[in-house]
Length: 345
Image 1 (cartoon, one colour):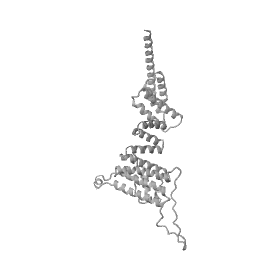
Image 2 (cartoon, rainbow, N blue to C red):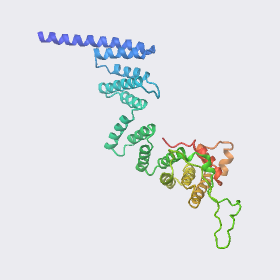
Image 3 (cartoon, rainbow, N blue to C red):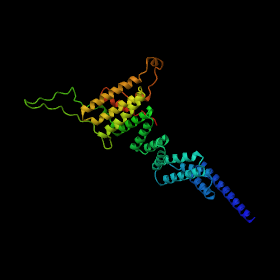
Image 4 (cartoon, rainbow, N blue to C red):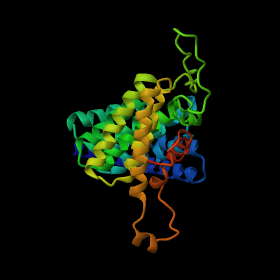
């Protein structure tokens, strides 16, 4: 009888603790709705200390902490809010593992709080368990893209394309990603697109020297300069060749892929910028760019029947990515329009 009495007291005390915890949780909810998120967190913490088994309290505490996070914010207060939200959602996952919201909010908070190292470890662990886990690969692409780790983001974008080599859009995504990098790192200068390193056919002929001496060579043109941080030389060539490789794969799968043709043109132009001081090597790349431009233009041209039925329909973004680049100066227009082209996420 004495044992039963003690057991009854335990249940009674537990019941009272839960009631008190729910009272504080309700106070926290009221403060949350009033916009007093710090006050709400204090009430939720009292509820947790009183009765630590309520998953809903952990959920609401995490949501209140997220409200105190500033988009793109830094500093101690931001880090404190992020830690608070991550801790709350971690506890929610432990208390209620069947509730998918806990894991979803945990991952989202890591992204919003710029906790990229933690996210990378999570997805790397998943990928180690299954090397073809596209969810983990996509997660790593997102993490490294947002962290501005280009080489890592490219690595996993290529991995995704290599897993399914029958998907033209995955191959295309690699090419677009590389073009965007080249464009941002030294390839956006319109002066480079206008520059023709070949001798000017309209220039005055070089002066002849006296008998027995060679004629003066034509003066070399001075190309537009790259700046610190630009991708130049062998690295520009390497990246360009990699982008062309994946675009060629896309075209093997889908021969009339006009967007891939347009980016073949654009990457050949980006590659040519590595040879602005070497006209003999620049010219074949410039010609190849024009050949792909012609193919893209032809592929984008509507058939007579389609033209009659869709007169006045504006072209899609991919169709406008390539401009008339039959002259070096016109290629600048192609590069400018390519800003609007987007890779598959």
